Length: 361
Length: 236
Image (cartoon, rainbow over all chains, first blue to last red):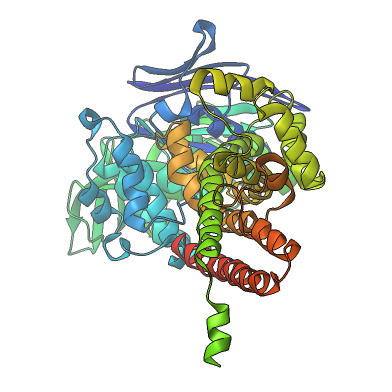
């Protein structure tokens, strides 16, 4: 199944022309600076904006197809929209807010249960409270629960963490990750914060000036050196994998990585547990030959896929493929010349286990 | 002292005027308020051709001399008026010079007052909340009833109370359209006027005026109290 979207709309002084397809269930993150057209995409998907031309399909169901004159009204789209500013109904208690969409969902379509949502989002203690008395983070959790209980075919989150401070963000992110595990729901997540992308995205769509710059699986996209966002200091490949085993004697855990393995300092998760790794590009070392004994735990044979020189920063971004997975390395242009790093060249890629960021998926 | 108090007691006829006034005001608000809410909603949330014209026409009674409004009502709803004649022929309803007519005159006079207050409170409701309701599956009427009206309720209730209190003092339009018939169209202000016109009626006028003041004051206090309670109830 897939989620596909094609939109064209002309605003005064701004044109939107966007198309992408992503597998469902899964989280599609729409990433771009403000003014890239993210909000318009949200409004069009939710049905609050009728674009000049649109075709939106979610898991086999058409929400809009302007060629056929189809535009399902917002109230019948079953798109659960979580607004940046929560928009809870001030005259209803938390439980009334949560049940608002649930009451209006077709009885046959009720798959996501009230108690389940209250449990997953930790809303048990808030049910009798009024929105005015909630913190920003609590409000956003209630808004997510309210959208989920409307039994959406697609959950649409419009910068849900943008108005929260860092501590509140960290409070919500694990809940969002739990959503993915609890309900196999297609999710479209709009943001301009890179850390949210790394934690949540399965598919990443980069937006700029009303157009799609690039789109693809996060693993692929995060390892591309030619995209503007690879110029960030914290750029690095994100790899989705799972815990393969533990080696208590060496205080290491191994994570599945093709025929090889990636070693990290020992984790608490049981084998089989899904995790995401981020390998910061600036912590990746490239060598022409296998080194002798080194402290680095992860030494893998690889092949260069692409090289992008970042002239502004006098560095180069090298994409290498190891076990079919793309890894991004930030090195100096001098290293590129000395090692003769050209596409197709064999290379050894090394990254310290202590440099790897482990994110629970 | 006891004599003074006894002088304050209303006579049978005076009580009748009080009851009639309350009934007329009640009916004017009862029929006028739902209509005012509907029109306010149309004006606040919908763009349609002739919107400003409708708005201007409905606000006319606020700026016209009440006697002129009463005379216009006679022209339209009088027994030979275009609407009045139809009502009479089809439903055997007579408005001019009847209690129902007094209510109609009151309703027309307070309509713009209620409309303004309701429209302001509807416009104060965040359209974003209506959008949220929409994405949660609520259709237009559903949204109006479960989000917009509850959030505008304090304004609507205050409008009703102020409208009711204004009815209690309505004079010009009522006397022109419904005349001054004791027991039928003689509301408090009309009764006070008649008392002042008749020799030795000062005491009666004073009693009725005191009653009138008490009702108006009660209305204001009630509107403050209800408004505050409702604000709290909708979480403001």
